[in-house]
Amino acid sequence: MEIDTEAVIRRLAIVLRDSHDAITVQDLHGKITAWNRGAEKMYGFTEVEALEMNVAQITPPDKKIIS
Image 1 (cartoon, helix red, strand yellow):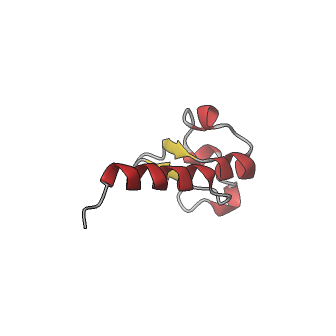
Image 2 (cartoon, rainbow, N blue to C red):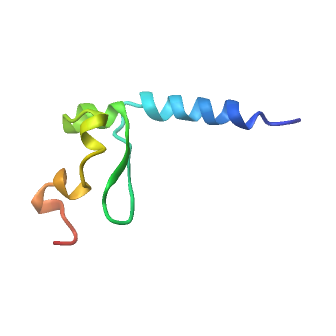
């Protein structure tokens, strides 16, 4: 059985985008590189806004591990 890799990627992208859970991706410097609809609802920032931010900007002070 051959796997249609592109179809799998499209399906997973839709699942991530439409998840009610907040899903974010950051690079090693904390720059946000991916932001889904669940994150928009949880944090109140659109994807366009979040992609200009660093994760430190949305992390409450009492939850930060590194200061």
